[in-house]
Every structure is written in C-alpha cells, then in structure tokens.
Length: 178
Ligand code: IMP
Image 1 (spheres, helix red, strand yellow):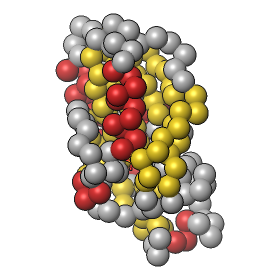
Image 2 (cartoon, protein in one colour; image 1 turned 45 degrees about the vertical axis):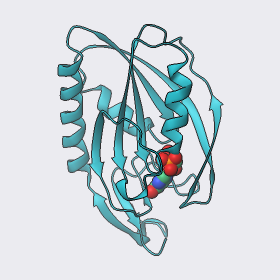
Image 3 (cartoon, rainbow, N blue to C red; image 1 turned 120 degrees about the vertical axis):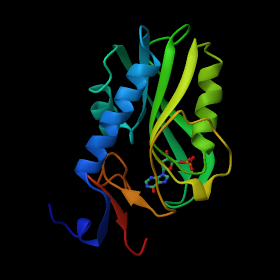
C-alpha cells in the first residue's frame, strides 16, 4: 500500500519476522502456564493486532479482555500521565493475567497499569510486550515476554499509530525525519 504516510517509512520488522516471533511467544506462554487457564488483557488501542496474532499460538484455555489507556505527552515523549479510557469488563481476582502491550518505552504507562491491576488481586500478573525500547527506560517494569528490543526511534504499524493513522500496516516501520 502506498500513501504519503508510508512513503516516509523504513521497514524495521517485516510480516514474516513478526509472525515467527508471535509463534515463539505463544509457545513459550503455553509451556509456562501448562495446565492453567490464562486471562489475556490487551491494552487498547495499540495492542489489538499483536494480541489477535499472539493468542492464536497459545494452546491453553484463554479468556480475553481489554482496557483502554491513553498517555499524554508529545508524539515522541511520554509524560507518564496516563488516563484510563475504558476499564475491564471481567474481574481478574484469582486469575493468571497476562497484560499484552504494543510497546514499552519509558515504562511509565506499564508501571501505572501494573500498580492498578495488582490492587485487583490476580493470582499472577505477567507482561508480554511486542516491542521494548531499552534506551528510553525511566522506570524498570517486569517484562516476562518481549518480542523485540528496538532502537530509540519512533515506530508505527502493526497497531502502533502516528496521530491515530497507520495502525493497520502489517509491518513495523520507522518514520524517517520524525
Ligand atoms: P511509555 O513511555 O512506556 O509510557 O509508553 C507510552 C506509550 O507511548 C506506549 O504505550 C505507546 O502507545 C506510545 N509509544 C511509545 N513509543 C512509541 C512509538 O515508537 N510509536 C508509537 N507509539 C509509541
């Protein structure tokens, strides 16, 4: 697909690489939670594509819920001020919860989310993020499953947006001159 937005992109992770990694992560989760039910929580909006691909590789009893978060800040800099735009529809008390995120950048959003979810008394709480930008870490958060460590660049596609555009791209690209 060509548009004025995709013309300015360098592909960082193509469809095949992402597909392969989703399979590996799904297999790892399947092994780690053998014999258990897992409750997967997707963080909207960015995680919707990744979650859909990931869960199809988890061979366990899986239930799914979503919550919406939006963080204030400029496009390339997170402020750490997070707003919950929609809450879970199912209680998580006593469940093995896996939070699925598109990207952990400074870690501020994930820290806020984990503190919030911990108060609801899940049996266990794990994090699965497709991307991690280690160079930008401000707070350390536990990440049990990481798809790819990426450089400190602004990336879009496969759920990640630039001002709400480009979430639908099947690959992840770096925006040139961001
Ligand atoms: P945090 O800095 O870890 O709190 O990340 C905050 C949020 O910023 C993430 O959940 C993403 O929605 C967004 N974000 C961070 N880096 C990128 C990027 O490279 N592209 C698109 N969104 C990003």
